[in-house]
Image (cartoon, rainbow, N blue to C red; front, side, top):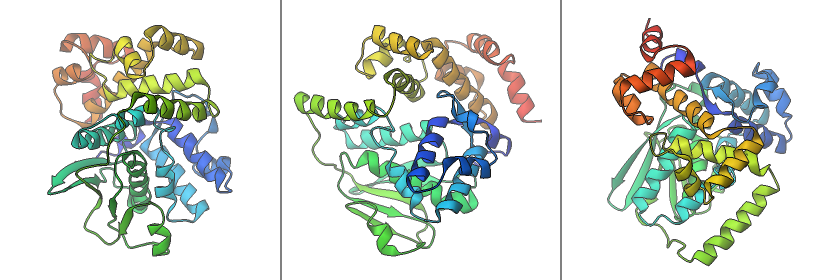
Length: 337
């Protein structure tokens, strides 16, 4: 199902991805301010760490970034930089995951929620798992770039447990083939294929089981992160991502703190230092999910209520009205007029 034109203007992409992209282009000699100016986007919109951009705004940034960089491999390379530091502690959850199919599902579900530019479909066939990308937004000339971002990001996360990858693109090889082949160690690039997808062996390499090794690995990565960002703002981002992964009734402060390996008191302290409240963050995530479901799907209200953590439709409707000033029914009807 293709998404409607109106949905292109719904803010659903965290600004942190845009900020990382601007740092990426700056590293390659392009002033990020120029990218925003060409895309007709106010730089102030990126100052709020809890802000969101629309699909249309993200497309503008990527399109003008592509023009300035003039390198067809930048999508894949940017995706690779959305690594453990970009995805927070999610990557460490992968290290402990022994069920490989479950691991691939974790990767897909995480990207589907946190970076909803393309949809993904998982299939297991013989000894391989494939992740096929679907362009529901009809990106046109941006499709190779968006596919590359997903391919690179999947590679960055799944390479923790897999050594072999095949990347299939539905467009001709842009530029030099050797340059593409060198992007991913253990990866094979194929172009002019029927679809965009990633193929991986059904069995990955042995996981890390030793708690001491895990602690050392985690400590090393955390120490690198702490050089780059404020601890409290980092916790805000991690909390939001945990709630986005599971916005229902299990998205309690206690559960999120446990997933982050922290105490509830410590999480609350970091949020307060950064100027945020746990309930506020959770409500923002739930409102975003609910609005997407109301505008882009025919999901019954009671199902939406259940998905985002409400026991009945009435409670959900009351909460949604307190967030937006409108009832779920009003939002759905207005969107379809």
